Image (cartoon, rainbow, N blue to C red; front, side):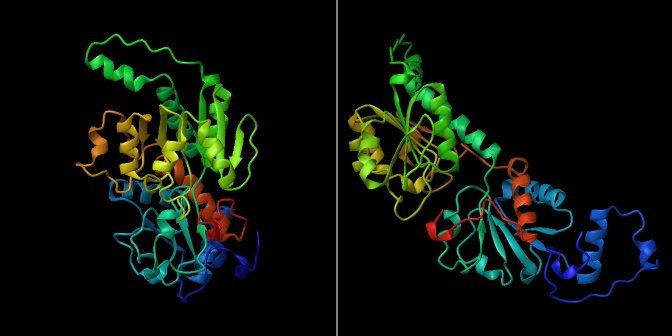
Amino acid sequence: MDTDPAVWPFRRVEKSHSFKTNHSSRDGLAGFKCYDVRVFLCRFIEGNIMSIVLKVGEARGQWWVDHMKGLLPDQDVRFYQDPGNLDDVEIAVVWKPEPGWLKTLKNLRVIVSIGAGIDHILVDPELPKDIPIIRTTGDDLRVRMREYVTLHVLRHHRRIPEIHAAQKTREWLQIIEPPMYERGVGIMGLGNLGADCARALSALGFKTAGWSRSAKSIDGVECFHGEDGFRAFLARTNILVCLLPLTPSTHGIMNKDLFAALPENACVINSGRGEHLVDDDLIAALDSGHLRAATLDVFHQEPLQSDHPFWDHPKVLVTPHVASLIDPVAGGEIIAGNIRRFLAGEPVPDMVDVSRGY
């Protein structure tokens, strides 16, 4: 253990405090484990602790705060509704912070996204410059997205929406479909989540392809990239899954031109971002019969407005952004581990290249 407190990663010295005890230094440390001694001395010498503010929805806010306090007992974890002195805050753990909120944290050192995407942070026109951003990824998130995508690819492959609709009219509808090795499934976006889903679908036996901005290589997956590969990728895809990051170049990518490039009776699944989709273009493609069905987990406005036509459309399944919903148990360990690595000056695998937008 380093004996020089100047190299300890816990926090900066912003102000000094006195510390009084009736015990000698030696007696005062009796019974502490090595880690406890380090935390005790750090507080004794520096007089303050790292303040972390959590900006999450109210429904699970207290759960997040309580869980993160347990994972980071040596830090000061606060909820954004009762943040105390904002000048104390050096770490912000956020999901969809309001534009301008992050700039109120004058001593902010790092922003942590509660999720794999960072578009909800970058959309802030007043985002403080040169503040590093850490995304949250991990096995739990990959497994949940893999479950969701596999479920709905199989659902469309076996035409369960039509069978379910036929049940309502007591129709005995037997549909003969080709086996999965003849069904083209395409994943748009081959990042952490997309590549994992592509591998899973390929392992099941689907004729799986993926498309990304730059060239990728994944065993068992036919990979396309760039503008030159986009139309060829769409032409062979019967079930399209969008797992792209949201950037200026992918905003509105699921539009009438894309739908027209898909084969007749194709299905689409969007579990990327709502802004990837042009809603009216999807409805038109479904109503014309060119597209057979759609599963949508993300929307321009969430919760989805009660009068939105997706709710009642017979060819659309709406799910309430649950494909890879992160909770304190699934994400807390990952976030806490990344915070510890950041404070220790160690490499953080989930650190974002902000210039790429994801």
